Amino acid sequence: MKTTLSILFILICSLNGFAQKKWNTEVPKQIIIIRSTKSYDEALKAAKDASKQLGKKLDLRELVPDAKTGLTWPESRCKTGESDEKDFPYYPARGDGNADNDDYISVEYSDAYKGFAKGFYIVVAGITDVSGAAAEKQLADVKKVYKDAYAKRAMIWYGPMD
Image 1: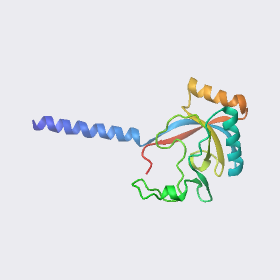
Image 2: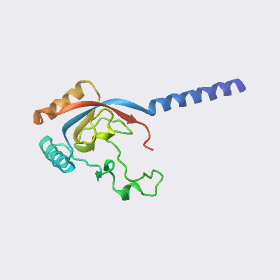
Image 3: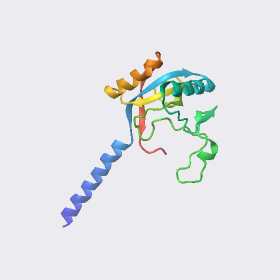
């Protein structure tokens, strides 16, 4: 009985370790970019135009410009007093946490993505896997309207956002 319990305990601990390694990591993704600019107002205008031109939802995720972090949630959202309280300013980069593929228009700040030039507001039209038919189609659809659109590879955080 002790041997069985010991083996079961070791097995459970091992599985938990594997799950943690898979969860707390970065995964490669492709970010489809329509425009980059140093001006938030220009990026916002381009995002609104892209939403209309491409027929995609515009989701700014309540983000507002911030001199320190480029973008942030409003202070009232950051300091809610809940268990997931975030310091202000706080910028949750698109895709971080769940690393899901998506297909909507937003304005993001380039500093949040490793390997991107710093200090730019980027108009993002989607996040996809780095290769595959779906990724190619999503980029091709955007390029029909925005000839200069491109996909840039980034490592997106996959794990808890604390």
